[in-house]
Image 1 (cartoon, rainbow, N blue to C red):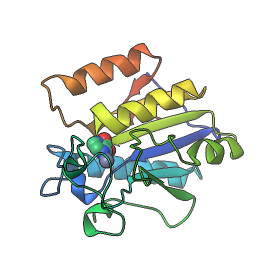
Image 2 (cartoon, rainbow, N blue to C red; image 1 turned 90 degrees about the horizontal axis):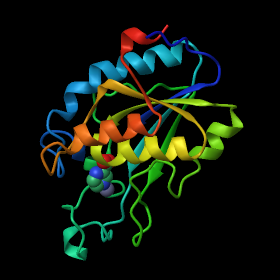
Image 3 (cartoon, helix red, strand yellow; image 1 turned 45 degrees about the vertical axis):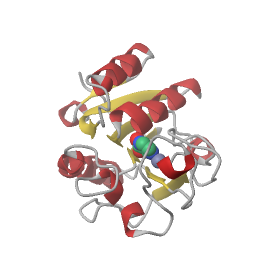
Length: 194
Ligand code: VGL
Ligand code: ZN
């Protein structure tokens, strides 16, 4: 399948932060393995003059999703800490890119890059109609960002070669991919883009 990139397209790179990578506080197994491919996507969009949006989990130290607060996750991606930084090998362009912080209020979690952020208005302002989504975790923030985009009326493309999941339960990522495709997302790989 070939998809020709056009001026209505944007890239969304989800949560490629140190805490979600091997050695981090909430590691996604082999999460760093997708960095070279994500960088290829980012270069492609940047060269075509298309915007890239980098979401990041950006929690206060006492966030509701943390175990100490009764949540299900170890403390992760605390605002301003090293664990919240993007992985050092991730290519983040100097221009035409936007950092979207989410999950920054103590009492709310946000698995979707659209939840409590200005992502939708930034995309809308730019006339973006199609979003290409990769990153981590397939079964949490990628899933919710893709479903959120579809709900808001965007056409969503799932970057099948640039996602990794947590799989707390065996098969979670596979089921998440199925769910996104059923909801209308189109699965693509780098060679599909023209
Ligand atoms: C995420 C668990 C907790 C994610 C964020 O980025 O998928 N997962 N917070
Ligand atoms: Zn989180």
